[in-house]
Image 1: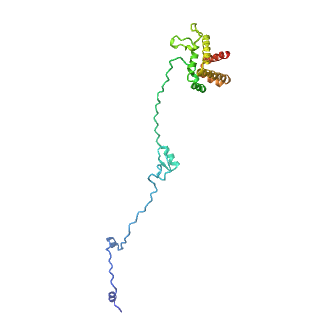
Image 2 (image 1 turned 120 degrees about the horizontal axis):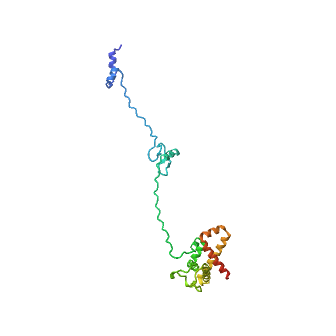
Image 3 (image 1 turned 90 degrees about the vertical axis):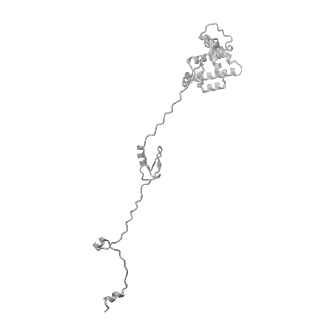
Length: 242
């Protein structure tokens, strides 16, 4: 038999280094095992931040923008919540209107044919003959009482053959108007042509007035009744002389 000492001498010695046990391990007799620290789990951030996030819920990507403040939002629900809490828009300050300038009142005699400017056809006729309004004013002035101021007298070309010494009356005024209208129609050149075209146009307007009630109402607004009757009398007297 081989002795135990001889077997121990034959086995190679293993140089095993052991760390000293901790006091706790020495007391309990258990070997201390090294455990690596556990890494903390990485939780993905589901809340999107930055310019792509909804400005209301801050949880989803924006798809629209508020038309008033351009806040991004993702859905109709977020838009509704935003509109309920939206600050009111600033009220624009009213722009003061410039003071309207009143037209200066005419200092000369009143023009009875001024209302005819509302008619497009008559306005075109007045543009064609720029001196026609003054011619009509002179004819109308012939039917009025003689002015006391010599500077406001009727032009001599329209007062030929008319006596100014007698007292004025409405019949005499109409007679003077007829004579002034007749002379104006017989004037040579553009002056007489303008008055003749005006008389023709007035006849058409008066015919339409009698045919249509709407035309009658329109013409009554443009004319004073007294001036309309006076024009009719002048036209009838001129027709009877043909």
